[in-house]
Length: 382
Ligand SMILES: NC(=O)c1ccc[n+]([C@@H]2O[C@H](COP(=O)([O-])OP(=O)(O)OC[C@H]3O[C@@H](n4cnc5c(N)ncnc54)[C@H](O)[C@@H]3O)[C@@H](O)[C@H]2O)c1
Image (cartoon, rainbow, N blue to C red; front, side, top):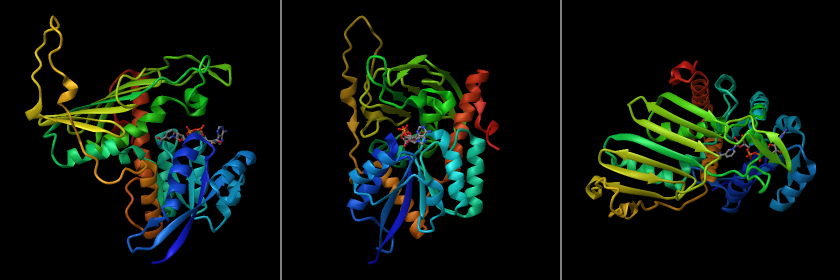
């Protein structure tokens, strides 16, 4: 059993996602467990090189995590033949240029979603990656969450019969910044800086919906900027991006998916993201971690009568779906797959073509909102 290393240049690790999910909970966690096991029993240990703009922040981050190398010289890192993988978790508007440079340098590339700010740019990156014959991948973390893995088991076991409809509810209150500090970066609320909930969240909805339920044929969407003024570091600014979006999608097999996304809603659900799936033989409610099901044989018999107190405890009639296997961080699980793909050539389904599809849903939703009509995804795919 041999052990080897893979050197990964990680750009954007001073940000929320880069630091928490990718550096701390994925790459450092993989190092702590002794690397990733390959099919032949060998192990690969990732060696991160932190890349960014601010030397003080990078030095402090490197010291905190015990990482030996950091740099502010992206070009230098891409020119270094000892770097195997370029990873990008910068803010969205900077991704395409950096990913293009990494492809040109012949690196394997893994990056956060969305791949770019529109599907045409994403398609160009996918074509370049294909032509350069590099390994490429895009984060699709929600598919690896315990709640959605349980939902997949229900689907695969035929539990639902024919799936009729899916209701997705995502969101929470993001503080405006005047009284309480905001819990998300200000660029998320500025269209001109790559913000907006449609660009941020619809790439997720695309891979969750198409990964679990089938191909999306058509979308109708309405975006809103509910909160027009927000504050960053005590200074007010105009929020130019959508902070909520209300969408209905029809899948190719006729399944209806409704998807609410909002940073201006208060939570009265068990989790920040919840899907209810209704099928002829059963229904399920899946969140990030939990999943409950109700079979047709256990379905209560409600009778509409608002003149008496509700006689049924609806929530009591659902069964928790037991989790299979150990729950690991969703980002770590996908990183492990990508590292195996790069080093051992194992299949990896979530490449840049998957990233393109996410942006096709974004482009179709935007067009629907602007033109106030249903838009087929075929209208925005080349
Ligand atoms: N997979 C997920 O669930 C998920 C969740 C949130 C965000 N994201 C994606 O991750 C990426 C980063 O989002 P985040 O919330 O971590 O953002 P963030 O603002 O916290 O981090 C942005 C990173 O980009 C760097 N950066 C480089 N140039 C910059 C510039 N000119 N201005 C500002 N920052 C600059 C920052 O230093 C920082 O490291 C986005 O593309 C976003 O879509 C993914």
